[in-house]
Length: 127
Length: 387
Image (tube, helix red, strand yellow):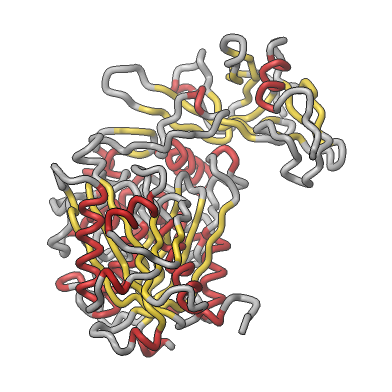
């Protein structure tokens, strides 16, 4: 029987990001970053994945704005992290009309214990 | 006899019966009711009986075990049962799976069917219960968010315009105006699409498929039996499926789909090229889909889909008819649309499509899309002359 890791990937993600930083899994064998969290590397099938804090810097890859009749417009983005993976997220502090594809952003951990998610704020830096 | 591209399946089976029911609104009926009506119509069309059906292929979003509930409702005891659910593409994939099962002798009469009553029931598109864990906290609206983000990226990357997206909706409406069974047949201009209620930028409500009730059924047999039945067979010439991801955020490229592979596989099996296709039935859940699939299936280079659909090229009278029934945008869209691509292809191949009939149709490409650009299935159907 295959042995289990200390915590499942989803639980481990929650435990790591509780310190306010974005953590990703890195593959010891192929060196690539992995997101969403997994038990094996989707690039090379290795089981040797290690959690590492990362820069949290990224670039808005695409966006859409949901228009709702009785609620404010809601922007959803895809962010390409400098470390490679892409993730769905949002920019809670930016008006939807001010978000642009190509905008540089910085990750922030949002939410309560056990239900933390990665959101982004604008960043001034260049890649 | 096996061949590297599966070409032993080419021409091995055919669609011999098609049926629909409850298109538009079917208040007071459930999904299984109207599905059964479509099944009866398809079997009557083929000149076969329910008791002849010994292979079944079924998927839906209303039942946890769609194919089992369907077997029970219809009162059949099939010997080959395939409930593969890849979303709205399922039924196009089923056409290849049915050909395989028929060729292998696992069944003699294969039934592919679908029914849903989301419009009369929930009154909205009911998404799957389980959605991608790391997307859900950001409150996307499934399935639309994925398509809107792909469209926005396509516009940024290739200069595609909202007017070009609107061309797809207008072309579909012009076809629907020739189809008495289409749900939306009123006039629609590019300005109407652009000025319609914005739902998810850059998509207005007119860039989005309808939400209707509806059921569709297709009956397939081996080619030898098909020739003895009453209708002109619509032969299965080639098929392919492909999938790389479930979530839009996991797509290798947001503006490029697995249709590249499903299409290449289907063309290889058929021994044909895009230029050999007379008409196309492309699952148009959103206007961007048609642009993506025209590119990915090889009808135009990547990034040029917007220009390709402009000037009425895919509309009635255009050089490449696409979605001749009016598509999911204007004909019907009961949650999963794939089966209707097969039904319209068959009617066009038989020459039974009435006012919307395209002249001398001998080849049709059907393309199904599943979930959020997550699964792609292509099937090429042809008239007897293409065998």
